[in-house]
Length: 81
Image (cartoon, rainbow, N blue to C red; front, side, top):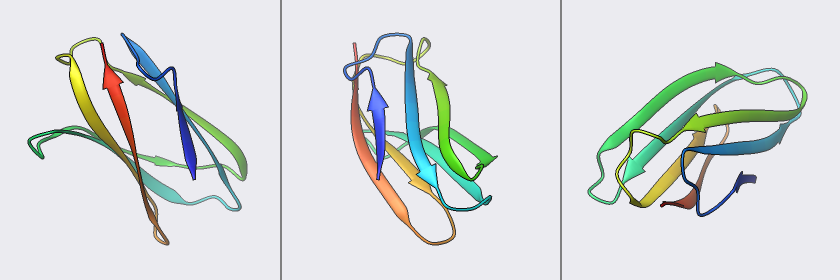
């Protein structure tokens, strides 16, 4: 699982998650129409990971954050104010 804070968010949100190995992962932010507005790839480290999303250019509304690696696809909701 992963957490997002603050939620609701204004300009920035932080995604935190733990990983048991170094591996590639993707973070996608999808708006309510299904359009991907952010799509970034990274490599996690073993242990706690943290990634900051810049939301300052996005319209207010509800978004879905998708965290995906080779083993799983996790989703969470975030509100941008």
